[in-house]
Amino acid sequence: MNRGDLEARIAFAAQLAREAGALALRYFRRELVYTAESKGEQQDWVSIADRSVEAHCRARLAATFPDDAMLGEETGGALGDRVWIIDPIDGTLNFVHGVRYWCVSIVYIEAGARRIGVIYDPPHDELFVAASGVGATLNAQPMRVSEAARLDRALIVQGYVQRHDLDDHLRLRRALIMSGAEVKDHGAGALMLAHVACGRFDAYLEPHMHPWDASAGLLLVEAAGGRVLNYPGTQGLRAGGAVLASAPALYDALESMAGW
Image (cartoon, rainbow, N blue to C red; front, side):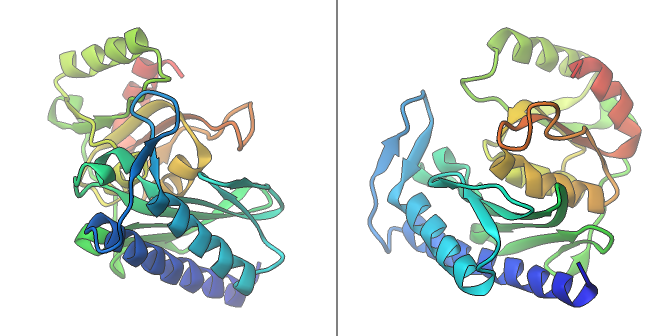
């Protein structure tokens, strides 16, 4: 990819995230009426808002980069040599309960490598953008991961959903707490990764994340100077994998604790 093509795709991804976020925000504020629905698993929610935002993204992508593939959380799609992976609303459980911790997540992957990652937080109007070899920004200002060097001074986020093994989750949570770390879970993995990238959190761990939840945030953390576990692992991109992203000085200890 030449520089001009990269810049065009960065600008497109940032604009699309803002458009998608603006539409989602109208649903969040109940300017557009919707009903929350269960996908079948406990606490796994979706709504017409998710589907409407994803449809907007798919139409815009088809019009702008018709030869690129798209994989969306709600309506699926194909992988390809050039693919956009989109979560229209990450943190839907928060969204449907009126909690202002959710986001739009967009990643562009070319030849298997994460090239562009954008996460937009509409309630707080914060746009996180990263591109491989370029760096990472928050609202157009450079951002870096934290300089945390001790777990007993760290604020860590640990993701949990019903499909994870509860005993393993609690074992790791106990180990983190016993190390002196403060451990939280705000319920939107992509946004928590963005907040690791900008230094608000010192690390994020989760035993499995889907590619639409993890990919953009992992690139943000990498581009902001953090360390990340190899993702998606042996099962391939569609299957997803374990996620560990942190300030560099904490990574080895956290990887040892997690055992992934």
